[in-house]
Image (cartoon, rainbow, N blue to C red; front, side):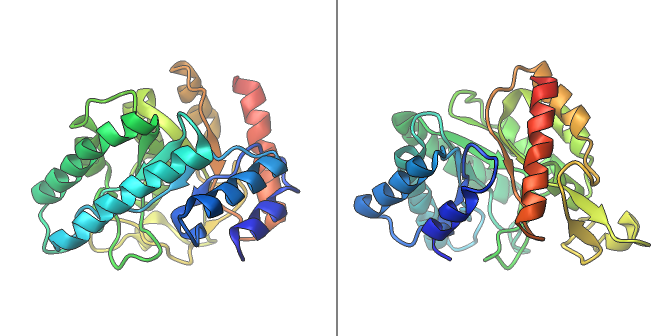
Length: 276
């Protein structure tokens, strides 16, 4: 479907904004972008975050350079569609077997540090996600595991235009404790994905583990209604409230249809009212 189809479909949901993915945008010229912005405004939606997937750890320097230039363009688009303070997602890149941990961290930190003056110029916030894997990537996220993710985050001091895009389900997929991760980054969270995961009947975490200690998207690890799966959302909301969090929480789901999306949204409305 086109982005305009999705905006129209989402009008039936009790949501206040629509987070977008860079692949939704078939063109980047201002006229097209403004038509997307007009459609969002007509539907009554804000655009809180543009999800981008730069590959800053690619061993090919020309690919890294293109990823950097693409992220600059996405920062510009984020501001045009989301306005001041909107979030533009950044990632580290793929976990290429020939790229060492030290090298991948150095490339990622360097790229983000060079992007920050541009984010300042556009007043856009870069949110680094504890991600699993972009759908177009061959390898999982370089910074999928908590220790690598935290080393990158800790190396970047900016707290105005850089922070954490927190996804508790991705921590589960990585084999990490999502609540322990949140406790370490809660004062730097700038956006959040509220999804949930379920273990299929008879499945265990040990049965899902791969040889590298991470968890893949096994059929035994399923999507479902937010608040009914493995994540402790009462703990998550309390932790965010403790640091005065007042930014966006997005649903990243709908794998099983719009009815589940609506149920997830209704759950988050209740949680926001309880913990506001």
